[in-house]
Picture 1 (tube, rainbow, N blue to C red):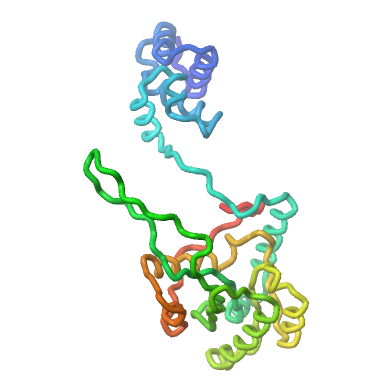
Picture 2: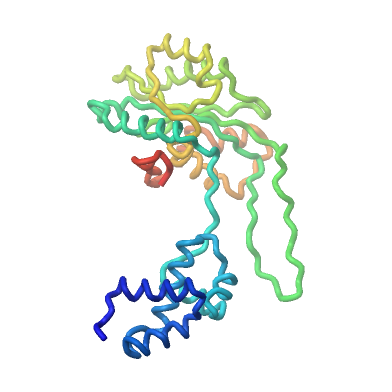
Amino acid sequence: MNDLSRPELRLIIFYEWSCGTPAAETVTKIGKVFGETTVTDRTVHNDLLRDAVKERPDVTTRELETMLGCSHQTISNHLHDLGYRRVLARWVPHALSPYQMQARVTACQSLLLTPQRKEFLADLVTGDESWVLYNNDTQRAVWILRGEEPPVQPKANLDEKKCLLSCFWNAKGMLYNALLPQGRMVNATTYSNQLASLVLALREKRPRRSAVHLLHDNARPHVAKATQEKLQELNWDTVPHPPYSPDIAPSDYQLFRPLKLFLNEKRFAKYEDLKMATSPTRSLPLSGRRAPTTSPSDGSQL
């Protein structure tokens, strides 16, 4: 018989698998017709695994063990050799509609087409808010002897002490931040007052530049009538930010993530201590991570 091409061999293997033929029997049947060296158990198992995982990405190794007639360890080894790893689906804050995904694409494309992009980026200021906790203990793994009970650690209390931190920054670093007293939230009045304070910080830190392109999300205080009137008074323009898109808000992936790592395992007894730890004079850490990428085709995060 003529040698089989790779696609032809895969088709035969897939056919036998669809008929419920065990992998070992598939190898024997192919060997009888095309020669004993045509295919190995490993090749058949790998092809069947690829097909099974493509058909059902959430299939378990126990289910694959039953389907393919192999041991659990063999399945695990083959999956590892094929480059597969089992992960949990990544939670996203909101299931985007097609319209919202297209809005992400449109916003990103418009920014890429901005004329004089270097000047635009030099005048770009971004701001956002995040909760910071007084107690930043995290769950840690510990070594214990067999038979010992693991230590207990209470879950974080949703009502535990925390303050809302507002930050405004640009490509060169922090411009202005404000830690609200415990229990206080940002409203339109608070946000407008913060913008007024930001003006003073900008005059001090970049006195030769007057233009401001403000990038913030669509939280209610940011789009309220009072805020819009304040922005008109300042003659600042806002950069389009699509709804439900924290993954492309610079503060979320570039500032607050490293800030939480910086605060990890730290405890603060007083508001003043927490304020000092998040003060601009402490040079809040900015991440060196690459920004998330939005798919140019459908607006989803890559």
